[in-house]
Length: 256
Image (cartoon, rainbow, N blue to C red; front, top):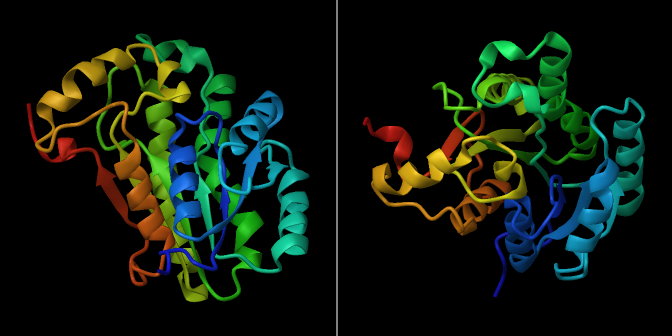
């Protein structure tokens, strides 16, 4: 029986632990027949390498620091040597200095906000620099999002960065459409990952999300997010780009 991603070569960023949303996507993509390469950065690289061993293969792990000007070309060269061409990429990269999160929106200065914007928003364009030249036959870029159309408690400047991320995805979709490259986002509900635990007040989301979401929500289950991402990486959404698909139990659609 053929898998949804049979024969597809896909780059997955942002795998730190097996609780990562990116890990769930990588595991399902491998199950559906994809050939994978993971990336990690800085001190997290060793964590990615350790976690990669839990995946079939296991897939190779390459260094990719979106703040290092030399890394995009280097990673593109390694992927070109390994694969020649590729079909998909998952953007699961995000970071904001601690002062950018919490109770005081006014506390963060530009230097800290700039870090959040570069790593969490501009990096989508940086990833495109890596993979687009290798997608001569078209492809799919999928980013993980947390809906930035409202102001969330404690999310602060990461929310601003996500708003920029969403806008960047639409502009990339517009720019890359002629090459047959789709750019879409999955706006996930809160899942208990390492990244989520770094957000002050994350428990507020955990406590209320399941009650308000029409379909309910389990903060320990990322499988629905993985399924949406894998579907977008596949050929099943050939005419969908610039889209943000909510996988949040329907929370976004209801009021208080």
